[in-house]
Image (cartoon, rainbow, N blue to C red; front, top):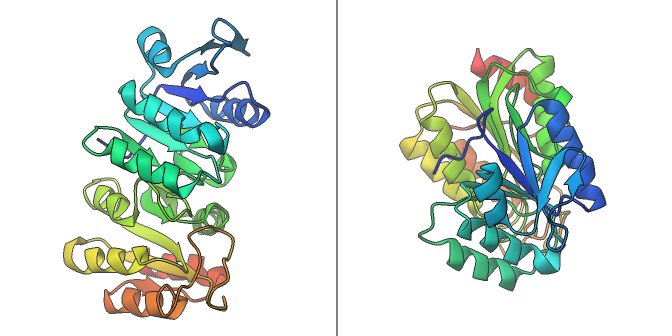
Length: 290
């Protein structure tokens, strides 16, 4: 299942009648994203603006042709919402919800195994293909269409900073993906790197990581062995003390693993161009991607 979205993506918003769902749905629609349905159990038959609301995702698929889902469901119910979307044969499931219990996400990942659904998130800003579709909460105006650079990040805020610097340097983006900062997520760095490596429109990638876990080290191994396109990297949390969570649930140094220093060393060893100063990443990208 493709990780990318475009003007052919037909979006159903789960949790569309909540304040957050309404606010971000309107911004997605304003960007030109085809939002064809919403889902809130018990409110089927209503409308949010001109968007029909259904009781189930299956109804949204059957009656409105939805093929992507954007989830704003509260944490206690978000796991069920993800599995409902997968059951309805939704291809790309973007989960914005923060605070989903780890045990719930373990259940979700087991449930999705073998299914064709592609999960992005949770606790993420979503995904945008500039000029075509925005399925998430990112500020659309900072993105520049036309490529040729893909962006992958664990942090929503840092995604926006990197994208803004790229755009100010006149470097457009093919697709920008916020994979989420939780310990258990759907699509990871390697999934996205592989997609960008196989995408003819993408000529380089920016990868933004942070402390905690081993995702960046594993991504570095993939870049060294499988990537032909240049990669620029940044790791946040260089000054984070061990044992203290920094922002995301997954951003915590445990024992001797997950430090920014170890991740930067792995990225350098893989031939990734590493910026240790976030404010200079645009300059580095301009030099590398020329």
